[in-house]
Amino acid sequence: GENVEQHPSTLSVQEGDSAVIKCTYSDSASNYFPWYKQELGKGPQLIIDIRSNVGEKKDQRIAVTLNKTAKHFSLHITETQPEDSAVYFCAASGSGGSYIPTFGRGTSLIVHP
Amino acid sequence: GAVVSQHPSWVICKSGTSVKIECRSLDFQATTMFWYRQFPKQSLMLMATSNEGSKATYEQGVEKDKFLINHASLTLSTLTVTSAHPEDSSFYICSRAGTGGLVGEQYFGPGTRLTVT
Image (cartoon, rainbow over the protein chains, first blue to last red):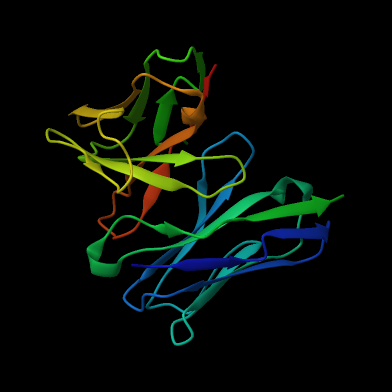
């Protein structure tokens, strides 16, 4: 089955800096890669996603890049703000038509004001 | 706005009792919904896939007689934790698939914090 590795587990940045979270996956048949933001005590919220036919996608301050050959994808947050502090999960799915994502272990992002 | 709701948002129950958690799809008739469990500082673990009008599909290691899932309508799935024990204390989250027919999309509910004393 699919295996998703996520790094780092904790990321601490100053407000205004950029943050990058990286994930690798093992199943070359996976074709959908979402990123979720989970605030304390809440459910995960989809913030951006990318499909395997696209190399990069951007939405305001967040962007995701995908390297299919190397089987890794990254989340980039620019101009970080304290409200960006949360746990971020990457995931991979789509292999065999499955709706069920395999999640990374999560990255706790702390943005210091 | 939210597309999946859960009720209650938190619940405390005594060991040995049962507790029911509801998950509603607010904007879409979902034939399939999913239940996850999340322990503190850990990732989401899929417990089961809830199928409207048929039996749920449980992941390996999840006791189907302990975690009863009922998907009686296209907008409601329920998870009942039977004979709860302190080790069942966790954050339970449901989700549904996206509406665009695209494989992989999931939208999550706000979660239910269960504490068993």
